[in-house]
Length: 70
Image 1 (cartoon, one colour):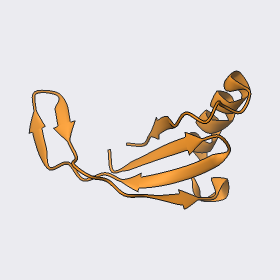
Image 2 (image 1 turned 120 degrees about the vertical axis):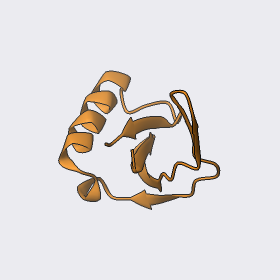
Image 3 (image 1 turned 180 degrees about the vertical axis):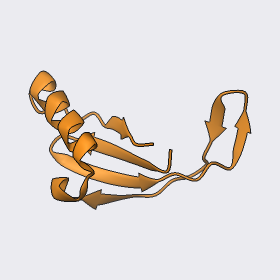
Image 4 (image 1 turned 60 degrees about the vertical axis):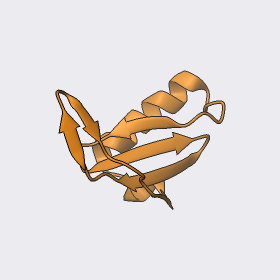
């Protein structure tokens, strides 16, 4: 995983993930900075996932939700 997308309410964030160490199946990434992005700049598969999640949640409660990419 190189990118992590978060959704909070109607705002989307892109976070670059760099694995620092790995132990068994757990990957430690340390501090990660995220930047706000427009829905149009999110890859199509993640856009569809976000649309499904917002439809199911009724546009969320302000709690961040993660969407991963490979």
